[in-house]
Structure formats: structure tokens, C-alpha cells
Length: 437
Ligand code: CTP
Image (cartoon, rainbow, N blue to C red):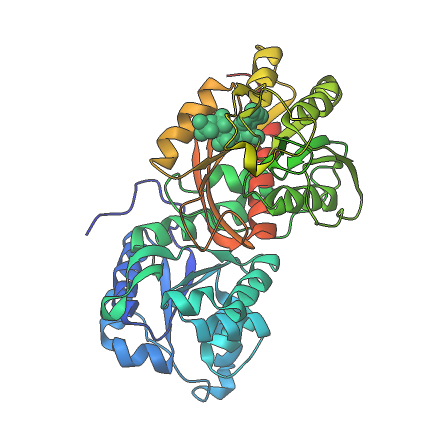
């Protein structure tokens, strides 16, 4: 087992480790050991389900402290709230679907649940379950609720699950959870805002969703593009793509809620305009190019979530193309690359901050990093559109945010609204960070 990094901020800190009933509960012993080695005082609460998979003796041996499971012990000492109150960070590892639901709804049906209700410290939750359970709308809603409340979710990872299954739902490794606990304590200790929380996240860990952000974009002017452009072939047909616009609209909504002055440049979509957002509708890549470049020097941030057609038909037939004339030969010509032009026009200046998206089906991150450099963007959100549970035409997304200084942050599968906030955290961190570079 690997050792924790030196200079740990965990020395003498009180960590409450909740272990619930999943096959991966054995990994909690490894997490406990990393925490103890880093100098933390670790109290373990083992749920009834957790106790089916791993015994208290293991944790007592590792932590040197009594393991608790019962609310009905030590009534006079107020056990049901004492551990939660004393904790400086609560980590639930693994967290079953049932425990996510209990935490989301504030149930108080066992010692872990009462401790969580009594805790005012940062909470880190590492879900572990079958892919279907993770993707179920009930679990998605519970995760959204917890995230909005400031609970930090770490994982789940994708990979082999119990019983030969595969998919999202695998418990993250103890080292990843350890990094999330450390980040939670560091952020709580330094009293920093969402921007710093993003910056301190472990570079390879799944980004831990953070507290609902305040008006940290107040005074910031943003252009957000969304949807898929359309390029006419004739009066009734066009070349288009599968972008629904949902990610861009979620970004616009989130940015407005965070105090930003948001202009949404939207390719055709049925989506309603989010409250507080100004909207300009466009159809083609060239319309979008005109709308965005006109605002280039007036704004602080441009987020290019739109899927822009790279090519358009050279000729648009003035009348409907008729089948009996045979298949038309369609010559295509390139459209302007809006983001690349913005990057070139900005040169060495640091405003506007440019955020691109990369929709990829193969070697997503490598392609994303290449696009980041080629287009002169500051941040690039990599979207693997080959997945069926995320990306185009669905409500959820899973992305990796790369930045021009080599930073990398994973945002685990979540609703596009939650992912939007995590992307904006990265934008705020970039706005507040060192200029240039
Ligand atoms: N983009 C743009 N103008 C274009 C094409 C893309 O501004 N004509 C922007 C998109 O809005 C996105 C980023 O560039 O922010 C990457 O878009 P993507 O479609 O992933 O990449 P392409 O540059 O089109 O390259 P390819 O299609 O070969 O992957």
C-alpha cells in the first residue's frame, strides 16, 4: 500500500469515517490506515450493512479507537451527536445508494445518520453501487441535493463492479478518497472560496463538488454559446449535429445565478431562456461567428459550449432538391473556427478568458489538450461523446477540465447543471489566478 504524501495537513485532525454496506467496504481499512499514518485521529462508525462486509476489530486495530455502530450506547454521553460534533471532516467510504438517500433526506435512523446531521464540518462522500443504481433518477436527485448542499462527492469511478458487471459505480481508490479528505480539510482551514477549492483539488482525483457558490461572478460579463449550428443545403434541409444545447444553457443559468452578466448566443433549440440571461438566436456558424466576435472586446469570459459546424455547403440550392434529379453532389467549404480566431485575436492579452469544449470519441484527453493549444484557449472542457450516459442529448455529463498551465480536473457524472457549476469554479479560479502564463 502506498504511503500518504509528506507535509500532510491531517496531523491531529479528527476524521469521522463512516463505512456502509458494500463489497468495497474492505477498502475503508486501507483509507483508515492512510489517515492514521498521516497523523489523523480516526473514529469509525460502521453501519449494520458495513458490518456484514468488514468487522470492527480490523478498524480498532488500525485506529486504536473503539468502533461505534449503535445510537443506544452511552446515552448519557450523547453518542448520537457527539462524534458528528467533534469531527473536523466526515468521510463516508463507501457510501451505498441507501446511505446517499438517507443523507440527502436527513434521516436519523442509525449512528452514521445522526452523526451526519450533527456534523457542521466538510462532508466527503464516495459512492459505490451497481451502475443501474448510480444512474437511477432517484440517486441522481439525491446526488444533486447533496451537491447543492455542499457535500463533496468523490467518484464513483468506472470499472469492474461486483458480480462481473462493468460501469460507473466503482468505489474510488483509498488514495483518491484520502486526497479528497485532505482537500476538504485544507479548504475548510484556509476559509477559501470556490475558486481556491478547485485549485487545491488533487490533480488526478475526481473533482469534489463544492458548496453552492456565492455571487462570485458579480461584475463579470460572459458570452456563452450553446447548441448545434445548422448549415442549409436547400430551403428545407440542413447539415446539423446532435448537440441539444443543454450544457451551454446550464452554464448560462449557473453563471447568471452566480451574479454574472450573461449573453447566451444560441443555435436552434427548444430550450427556454434561463432567468436573468440575455439571448441572441443564431442559425449558422457564420451567424454565431458574427455574434460572438462583435462582443469580443466587451466581455471578460467567452465560453464556447456550442457544437459549430466545421463545414457548410458551398451552394445553398434556392429550391428544394428533388429526388428524381438523383443524389446531389454537395461541395463543402470550411466555416470560420470561432474559438481559434478569438485565441489568435487575443494574442498575449489575458482577457477575455477563453473556454472551449472538445467533443471527442477517441483518445479524448489527448485531442482535448491538442485543441487547447491549437485554439489558444485558457480552459478546455473535454467531453467523451461516445458514452451513452453522458454528453449529447442527455441530462448528465462527465467531463475533464484542462487548463493552459497543465492543470487537469475530473468532474464525475452529474447533471449538466452541477457540471456547469464545477466548470464555472474552474473559470473563477482562472480569473482569480496569476495572469498570463
Ligand atoms: N469551434 C468553433 N468554431 C468552429 C468549430 C469549433 O468555435 N468552427 C469551437 C467549439 O465551440 C468548441 C471547440 O472549438 O469550443 C472545439 O470544437 P470541436 O467540434 O470539438 O472541435 P473542432 O475544432 O471542430 O475539431 P474536430 O471536429 O476535428 O474534432
